[in-house]
Image 1 (tube, helix red, strand yellow):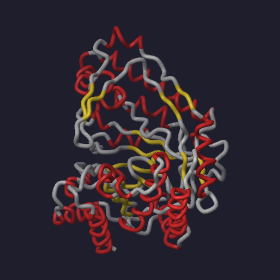
Image 2: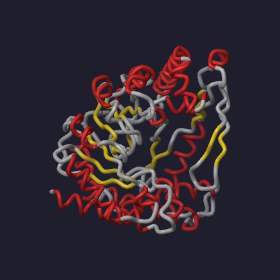
Image 3: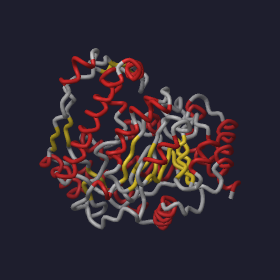
Image 4: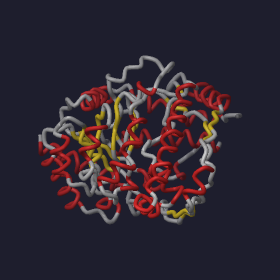
Length: 409
């Protein structure tokens, strides 16, 4: 790529700002805060806000100045880190690196899953390709996995050539998110049908989940054998929104990282409507062999866990962070977690996205702060899909959350 002087100057100026933030005493202090928090010894509840689907309203393409399409992606990455620090001002911190992700290609299980998207930045439907489990299960196969090492290294070299003296580039990033597998199952057979099949064809559902377990184990083994794993123990996104900073996962190098050096994560939002017994039969037993591979684990996302929390706590190895969904019974969750795990609260995003209901926001926060008092608590605003053209809403939520936290100290 022929990088223009114009694009180079833009990226270098942004890299200077990111490095200044990363080297600040504030970032160092926050790093210590998160380390203590993840060790269950936190000083106060931590506040995090992820703009998620609202980014096009907060940081639209119109603010980008680079002329090259690929460099505009890097420009946005740098600007978003600056925006989070300067504008949102939540408790996350910035590292003195620029992350380049592996260029990987992951095939399908033998079936395409056509997705049909709406025009509202989120909604979609799909056509489940498997309509007869007994007949079509044998057609499933492990995904074809490939990594473009030359392409990855080219990006790494280019970033370091442009601004590596200011903000060194490294290979690091998420290669997967959840190991829950029920989303993969729902895509293949349909969401409603997956739940019906648990009653009508239980043995076939067991076969499907066993296949997905074995396939995911193969995928994880491939990542490890190919040397593609990187640490996620500093400012990294882990679980369903936590920050991974910890001394308990202690790789001092990016070389030779194993799954045991990383955070694991599973959830099963798709099966929130099934009974605890069905969850215990069809879901959790297939997730445990995957979570066994990791040094620390997170569980849950937007599904209420109060009706299935006991088997999760009893069976998930080295569990450290548990999600408390917007509609969860927080009293039951607080009693079950009992300060032995990070209480990872996800407040209602609708109070921010649909209008801006400050009274409801404060009431929701106060309830959480009261119920989870004395426990390692993080309050994470996520799944925000719009701010209705009012970018100030996310920042204002952070301010309100900080005010309510301060009242309880």
